[in-house]
Image 1 (cartoon, rainbow, N blue to C red):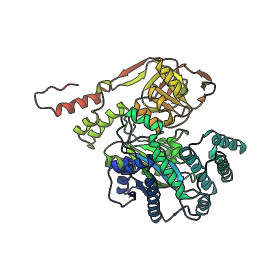
Image 2 (spheres, rainbow, N blue to C red):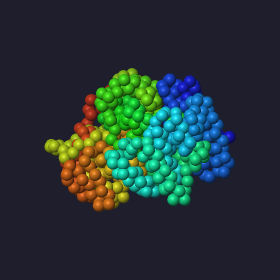
Image 3 (cartoon, rainbow, N blue to C red):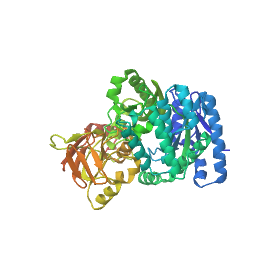
Image 4 (cartoon, helix red, strand yellow):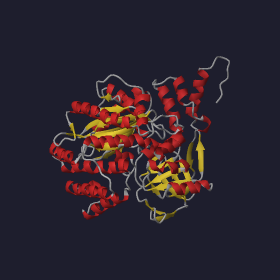
Length: 535
């Protein structure tokens, strides 16, 4: 039988990342710190290769391993998987030995059968929450496991929003969400597929789909671009759900212990109230930021910042943390070293050495892959007033022709032009367009969406959450500030300030001389006497 590795507070062993992936290994360390972590179990990376290869015996062992893990989760949580009174719902997550943000699949609310949905109503007295979980599960399963065309389901959702005379799905009540779930079930049946109504079968199909996402186009493209082709596969983690979508005292978010774009010491927090984690990282909604969270929920902001400091101290690096708030209670879902710009990497190394968190030698090692001679801060010259403002999500400036999808971006780039990828929102499915563009501009999303993380890692300027930006993919044009942007028009964007300009702006660069001088001092301090240092 496949080994099942459990993660919960009080469990004092951290298996190697090569066995369970970096995400699960880090979560085990968080649990050992005593921070609040939903219990989880993990099926290892090596087992996943058998599933991907279609090994029949491995598929039998998968069911057995999942059943064993669920039995442990039930005993740990006091809930029962698929139950009609105290239902346990789980998330099914990926986890390679090195972070691949948003490139592998996740299925949320697994176990939300029809009976369990009614059980959530009984357990919470909140029909809207229960049916929201059911429709979210169906949407996740439709996309990840069944791989159905999303358009008919989106059309039904949009039609229901219009019928109910509300602004969006967040305003739908429980009765409307129940009808939406039933409409989804009809569309699934019409496609000659099905969603099993047995919780363990939902779980097995979801785990197989997450394993197989390793071979998907965006995952393969990301590994090629980042030099990760040596990685053997992904683990699968099954974690008890905690719910950010059960009311205004709940929510989900992502936080960085320091600014991953500029290197500034202040934390960066994006959060959506009454939401689940995919709402934040997908980039389809524009979240609240740290300043508004501190104003609206000061106690929560303080607790979260304390957790960020503790995690940074434990991992001795700047952390990227996914969290959920369930009825005012904080839960940590994952932590990892933050993806960062070259500018931020330099700043982090200098500051962490100054603060005694790492040594000078380790600071140098962390910068070993960085071309210090090329690190610069770019800005526009004499730009005047911007035509619009968004949220700066990845530092730097960029000038390029507007392209409205990845294929257009590749065509413009192939012809020798610089490109700004302009999208309603950016998903990790746009990885090919992200790779060739100079910068990214979106109508919605926050600084912590998966695509913004990838933009920073690739050194692309990124502006998100641009109010007033609409993109018409059919007509190949966009509207911004009452002006029309035709595909191929020149744009200039500032990923620090979030400012947007029409036309081409002149760019100047400055070197971070103070930080570079400190690195030079480290090098000189560690050289034998009489040997000259050089940059």
